[in-house]
Amino acid sequence: MILAIDVDYRETTALAAACLFEHWQAARPVYTHQAIVTTIADYEPGQFYKRELPCILQLLSEVSYPLSTIVVDGYVWLGDDSRPGLGAHLYQTLPDSTPVIGVAKSYFHANGPQIRAVRRGQSQKPLYVSSVGVDVAQAAAWIESMHGQYRIPDLLKQVDLLSKSWPAL
Image (cartoon, rainbow, N blue to C red; front, top):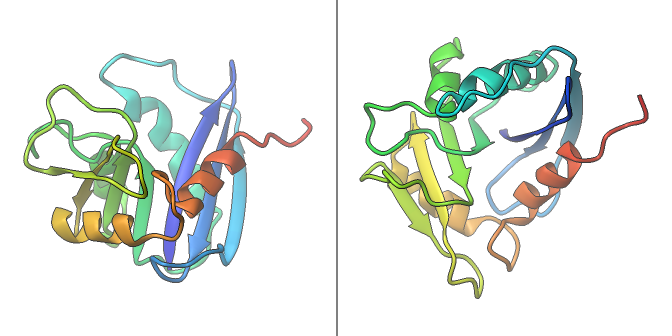
């Protein structure tokens, strides 16, 4: 199973969301989940993973399906593979070496050979794909093959919307 994750923040809380799906061309998730995280770190420029990683780990602790791949909103590598991003930090914490694919919507000024630009649909603006535990060319091909006709694959858009769909607290 493949798990896509996204996180939205408020002042002192975060909402982590997940869509679980069986294969890369799936049109619908098998399962969705939200986790409210009540203790979040302050944002530190260049250290985004310190804020987001605890939210993702809480969410993963609440998902009981076996995972073949995790997709995060952001970068696995910041430039080359010597500067870990959110995805690389997540991979290092996973006990079973589950591959992690990062899909970023914005260009990072130090993009290197570990990052592939993927254009989907009619969009001229690419997504930036990076990975650990799976070859980046394979990761880019999987993201390109995902269901949906627009730049953002449907299930990645769905998990983004789910992360912004705060339940009444």
